[in-house]
Length: 436
Image 1 (spheres, rainbow, N blue to C red):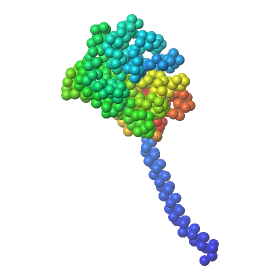
Image 2 (image 1 turned 90 degrees about the vertical axis):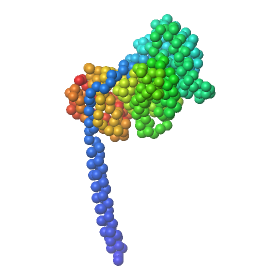
Image 3 (image 1 turned 60 degrees about the horizontal axis):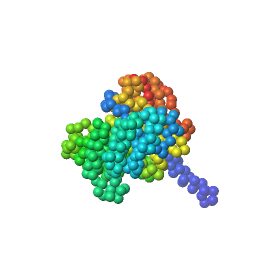
């Protein structure tokens, strides 16, 4: 056989397999396109009946420290409906005595921020007399706290203070002493505690023991939520957002159980998450100042509002390492915009149904406007058809994702008919507003 014939024969032998491969690839592409088309069909979210009242302090509070130069960002803070401050923030509450100078510094910032309600954390180790002295001075200045707490994250005392004697039993003893002293000085007070850490299961084990031992002297049961240290994958980190709602339901169950809460199962309690964020690691900025942090925060706030939490105080108002809505240079972070987008998210929660595991949906109705929070945790865009008996014909849609943030420095607002699906980009927070 000549060389030409050998080549021609070889080509003939490969032509059929190549054609089959091409057809197979075409069929696969068409199949994938069909899947993609099906996947891109709009999801339907149905907005139903009212469920619970949304507490005015559920998602409007922040931890504040004197290192925060709020005077430089008053316009930004005026836009987020700030209603309460927890002071001192975090471990600062127990690391140093609360002096008059510190209270004076607090007063200046408190006034600049519009005199929001104060949540004062008494130093656990200084004792009742120290708390009473602070209470007297605060009263002189006309800034009596709405809430009083006793120490910060006492479940960590044995480890952080290198002393295993700081047990839940000792915490309850000190709590009773401090409450009695404050009541003798001020009359009726509202006490919160025990503000356990985000450590799991240790923090919740300690909380449960405190409920058993001294719930009769605590008015607002509080704990902190920090599910990661900033090193998880984005997907794993975002999956932890459901922890917020799970823990709200668990604590309510404990409080109603006579075996767990023998001293107070017939009492009415408020619930507070007085520190929260995706990561506890202050020195690690990842998952504290990025879009993943904003997505997690939006999911957390949606659950806190619509599950009836009474007090939510984010950590923190301004820069404390990676924590805070605005950094030391004045750069406004993604998380700030989530709070700004949710300004006015109050009134009563409405039941939501539909969607899927990729999309969080939360609704609030204040009588003047229906708002729907949509959080897309997935890497694919989702179109959402909203259904409600009282949905307005026109909608304002506010959208935040990385691309919009990079282009505009904040969320983007558009108008559209309610009859059209709402476009929710991949990894995006969307707030839809209409009038009932």
